[in-house]
Length: 206
Length: 206
DNA sequence: GCACGAATTCATCGCACGTTGAAAAACTTG
DNA sequence: CAAGTTTTTCAACGTGCGATGAATTCGTGC
Image (tube, rainbow over all chains, first blue to last red; front, side):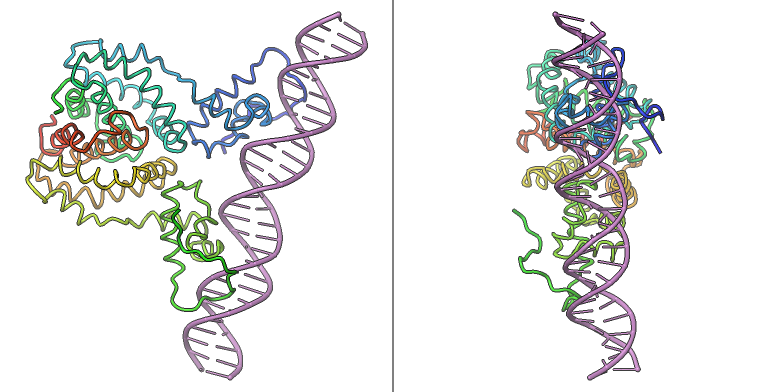
């Protein structure tokens, strides 16, 4: 069915010509396949095929599947500075919730949410992904959010509460697909969810 | 740790004596292992071992791993009538949110949330689980919630919104474990989350 | 009480996985 | 340009998987 392989010819052996970066190709392919299939579902052979190289290269460059996984998931693709600053400082303070909902749906809706489901699959399939995500959240995102919302009252708790609403919205909309939420238009989602996010971030949570 | 049915003696062949229900034992074991390990992580051998029977019985009774999976996840262990009725009618209408948070945390906190993570792993690892969960939600839970909250304004949307907050709370508290939410005590969670749930179910979402 | 069918175990098959070591091709150094 | 190093493919191994068919034991109808 789906083949990641590029060409049908029998590969010639030995070192490749030119500066083809096998290591980078493997990392890129690994990120895709691990996201799509989770750790156990992703096979070394399928990753190598998508990268257009032999499966033995995984051992040669990363010492095995575990090593490749560790290197691949540790590379965060998004730039947190840009995103968080845009969300927190891109408009009135009392419209942060709305901006978050619009941004989130604007990113995930066009790609059908399959990528979100894939991310959740990786998070739940392997504890290491959850660890990486947590470290990224705590050490990078959290500080910026805490500073951005400018609240004295337990800003860290507020940030995690907001994260819970965002995770839940993604789970219901993209993974389990409960209707009518899964198909609700952006305006409906904003009116429903934004006030709750706003309360978490700047309202009274005592 | 936990052992299903197990003894060390070599099993005698042929039909078993007495009314031992191999089919039911397999279904029970399958539900446990599929929940704990997800579809791909659960092996037919491990399920059969926990049920105390031979792996070949999976083929004999269910035609294979797929068939067992379909039958196993289609059996919902909890009684929706009891739960939903208790939640929706067990007290004042304006305290539904609080009752939901307390019930949810009361169920999952004692078992460390590992079971919740396992459920999420099953949901995200195999589309069929998400399908089953969705059907259960739509055809069983949703109608009761819609009737229970007694609101004319888009009760189905309200129910799915509430579900999103509950899913998200579980994901952040048990799976990715963002602090301080992951360790927040019940009272803090109630004060923070219950009002948002209450708004989803009975408040103004326009 | 004997024959037949259903239930269960066992031995084994074929397959796909991750990994390994050797062979081959391309770079690098003198 | 020859020797040495690095990179790459290939063939194969051991393992564990789901599945299959024969052998064995129990229950049941006659």
